Length: 429
Image (tube, rainbow, N blue to C red; front, side, top):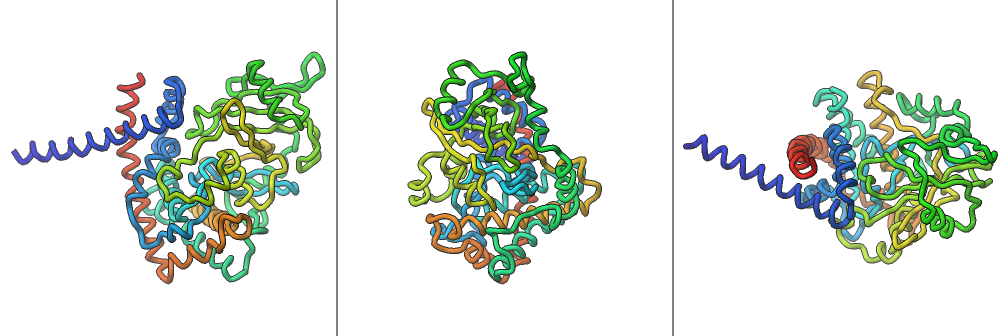
């Protein structure tokens, strides 16, 4: 009898969680994102690759869960931080900034919003655990990697507060990084600036440079070509392609590559590729407190993404812009010819992971500290002051608490991943 009751309890808990997952995925992917059946299948197949990919594609589930858990380390709702909104291991990467330096930084701003810094820190910590677990590293190593991220984050905030570093000018290059990040940056120095353009284009019979078609880069319709040309009247457009196969959470959002003739990039090269990506309301906005000033300033969701990148990056991409095309909002930026992530193959030992997460902690602190009064009228205070006030003198308690919560949530992700596999098999196969 007791065994039967225990099974009933377990089954009920599983049924409730499964129903919750089904409801959330339907609400966001079906109703809010308006993904077609084919687009949902494409997205879910990508998410089925691993628990980490599942985590990347389900930010709405993360925010649904974590916003229900109070913490003494949250900043006040009236003193929010401009957060990246989807901080994880694969949203950091190398690229060339506007003065020609190859730097390492956050490279995705689609979910930029205002709220407690702790949501960025928590999501990043969970991603570290999932990423390292996928590489076969044990729980102790996962916790140490998160430990390095968190201590580095707090230490860098303190350096900003003491004016030892300036978040407006601090960059991360081969000269002040270590391990895999340093190696990736040094390797990119040898790459020719024109290599990316040469890799994805060719000279046709009319002696015009155009895109080279493949599975990920496909021609647009004549209607799309005309519409994009209309919203970008200041560029001499050579060719336009629709880009597939990028990201996880972004599947279903239109992304275009636009080959233009221009002379304002870092090296003065005449041909460059612009990326024009459809954007929707930031996922955190559905769960975090409403900030009227922020919403009034960034009514256009493309403006929100552009504003987030301008606020968090050290220099401004001269091609950053936002447009509305056929009722959909987009943002535009240059597709960096030096774009590159640190991949699993770049890590040789556990110290490489610790060096990488330490640098990522510094970058997270830089982004949070930079995107406040130094940049935007939305803020009338320094975010590093408010964050350090929330952490107080209990840095070790803060770190241990964040690690405990991250490791616990990692287990929830693994459990949800199994339920997700069942849902996809029943609903979409």
